[in-house]
Image 1: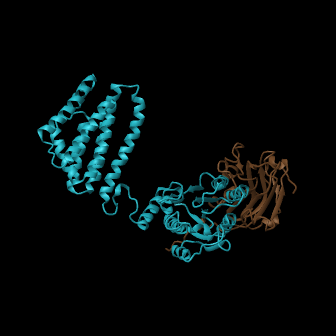
Image 2 (image 1 turned 45 degrees about the horizontal axis):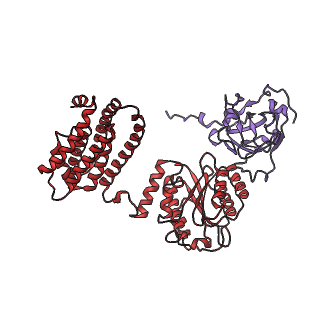
Image 3 (image 1 turned 30 degrees about the vertical axis):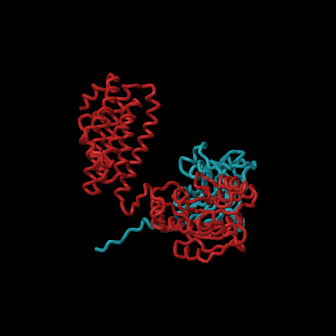
Length: 406
Length: 176
């Protein structure tokens, strides 16, 4: 919630006619500007934003820093493309506009959209940067559009001259399918030096404005927030566990069974914690889903304890119910279960088998026409189980610890 | 600007530290690690290891508002022999100056600091120009040797207050 006065410098030169950013560079820029204005005014109601154009007949201030979003959006209409961008003059005029801001307590910031090639010398840009730093003005640079040789280098030099304690940033946006605004949303330009609050508001504004494009997992959080939340939670858990597993893999190379057991017990403890956490989150879901998920998690726990023989049939049928309800959810949970069971066993072979087994059983369950209670299927699964059990017996300490856990 | 005794505070003058409005104190072109409180605040300024450094170049612009109107008598600037400030311009009651307009106004007073001053000899200012000071702007234009960074170890302001009502001391009259 930094109190800030921002001047946005728009590139409306001839280079902006190009269509490599959809629908055109200029339009992508305009969308990004609208989003930035929205984010800034939302993060702090006293923030002001102003806009100026750098090309055309000359540098022209369209609107001086104001907190009135309507005025800013209105002035973006009817902008014409033409001429050549004058970066140095644009930044200097922006600095002057900020100097005359109403509220002197606001921090000064300039956001520059550099789409056309930069014709100034590096030294000139560095001098401008130093002057900005001296007057405590922060500078954000959006490098897009033309990929001129030396352009990136010059802009990086400018940033280095201005940067004071990481308040200034540069973002390079290559041409592609992603819209300019989408790329900018995740950058510090939007989130403002890692403030979570303003970032969230910006993301919410972006989602509202942006529509359906590119949701994670292909699920619209607006339509089905519970499902989206469950999927996201399980993905994050999996990622966290994978990172932990990567660390442990290095340690486990030296420690063998003893280390593995201790980790197994701690993994079980964390699994129960996570299970209770995700169970509480799942309370928002419909009753069916919650029951299935609890059952699934209990099965996951049982499996990570390497005690599959007892609940074999129940597991498969439960999983088939859940799977039939929501295959995506079951798959995500299976993946997280598979990873947890990998962690709990130190041997990679055994973990593969377990993973395979749970995976195979879920696949079998989801296949139409395959009855998991079918004796042949059960035999097959039992034989897989025996293989894993024989591996277990190779570990001296595992079976007694399993007895304790029971 | 003749100086008198180096360490004794002139008769009748007080250290104006208590009257500085800290919420409005600003310093342009200061380095983030060595900032203005190092030179101004009680305790910090006595420590010669803590000093105010300039950042991008050798100039510094300090803005010090006061909680009440004061008269400024003298100023003491302590710094190292080489990087200590040389030309110091004082502006009274000019708010929010920047480096670009600092030379547009004639200063209320100007001082060229000698190495003696940098060791702790206060500089008397043109008292008549500082009778009614709400805020003081100190512009350090260059330093003794022309080095890239200017260092200031201590800044002390001496003066007296004008008879003004302390609004916090006013008590509401009870109706009985």
